[in-house]
Length: 265
Length: 328
Ligand SMILES: Cc1cc2nc3c(=O)[nH]c(=O)nc-3n(C[C@H](O)[C@H](O)[C@H](O)COP(=O)(O)OP(=O)(O)OC[C@H]3O[C@@H](n4cnc5c(N)ncnc54)[C@H](O)[C@@H]3O)c2cc1C
Ligand SMILES: Nc1ncnc2c1ncn2[C@@H]1O[C@H](COP(=O)(O)O)[C@@H](O)[C@H]1O
Image (cartoon, rainbow over the protein chains, first blue to last red):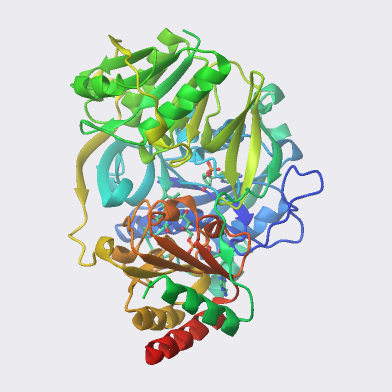
């Protein structure tokens, strides 16, 4: 059982974002980065599946796959430290700022060559938020896909997989499909582990294979963006929020006076 | 047809109301571009829904009846929509960005060699040039996105981007459209829909909700907002990450995958205001946000806001409430 986990590195949730001078993206230097939240859950799910298979006398390999500049090695190493076996780092300036389809074409070629039984992605990236990559990978690689997974179970000697999908408003539904398959993972389906010191030491010896455009037989035309971000900006607020000024104490006092006037409590 | 095609969503024989938001987008875009508008509905035995859709202004409602579409599967819906698109040759295909759409639309787009422009919050039309507005960074920033592609262009709109009530009435002709599907093309087997064991906490009836988000940093800090809730005689709610981490039980989660609430007063403490949270609480009568980031999207829907550190503001608030209560 070979499980590829796609891990994206994104600006930390806490990062204060500023827009660059040309107004085309954020100022992406000097900000902190993290592993995209659902991707951390995807890594954990893959590790748990591997551990279960090993316990039953089987085996599995967990491979982290990340596309991005050098800094994404931090995210890769986090996965390796937690227990992933090895990693693929897809890195080339030609792959910067691709749209969802073009980026997935690159990843699909790499993953297709590597071979896989399961692909795990997060359900959505914090930065671009395409909410598509896992499904596109499935289609490009000719395998079924399921999204917003809250549980993953292997069946029939790993020949099929059962996925519990989250639907709106508290509804769920199980889907069964043959492997290989691509599954987009929702946050909250497990409790991601922390890397141990031993894990961090072990990770140093693990392989991180680099892939660049030259290693692929993909034509540059296929990567031409079909969608371009022309301009980014802070949204204009549609509602006028009354901001209560002052120190914490002053603001609290004013807020309570207002709430009392409104008979809110 | 070379017009605009809107995807209508039904599940288990019920129309998803958010479809009307996509219809509004379609009606406006059709007017702006001078193109005909059609709506397409997939399913099996869903004629009455087609009739319902036909009460809105459009040139046609296409009904695709097929036994393989009775239960939603991404394979079935994507293959069927592809054939619909091949037959109707629309220039634009518009969808509401629901859980169902995000499950199959990227697959459909890929099979057509297209990239779906997903989760848009609006559009700009200059002459006949369409620019789409998307949210990036979890709604903190907007992006204007231009398209360099041939038809069909697939676009999905976020829930709330348009008001479904704005859909213009009319009478569209219902037309049947057939597609060829076979059982072996559908690789996924769906089972029955279900809910988890009945929830013991019902926040839908709450008068006041104090809701806590990741700004609280650690599980032990939840006590700080519990004090605020106690002072206000309020119920506690939470954003998803708090429940994901097990800091509060799942049944406290508010949002698209949790409860939808409409209390008199909703206090969002350390919550950024991502759309999936906002859809669950935007109908509260008064929304108060406490957040240290003045640009947090929650301030877009809050009536009252305090920009500050919750670890200072919340205890101060508890003091002031106690004082006010003592004064009567
Ligand atoms: C399909 C899908 C379904 C989802 N369903 C739901 C759902 O039902 N409910 C839900 O809530 N989310 C849901 N989400 C997740 C949602 O997209 C957001 O990730 C989530 O709501 C963010 O939670 P948060 O605001 O607590 O955390 P964050 O986005 O991390 O925000 C934390 C906020 O705290 C502020 N903060 C930090 N420190 C302090 C401090 N000391 N004082 C004051 N403020 C501080 C920060 O400025 C920030 O704004 C869903 C996502 C997807 C893709
Ligand atoms: N550059 C990338 N490198 C690795 N994985 C990615 C990358 N972009 C997207 N993904 C994966 O696809 C998921 C969904 O991303 P998106 O389609 O951008 O919302 C993420 O959670 C990742 O698992």
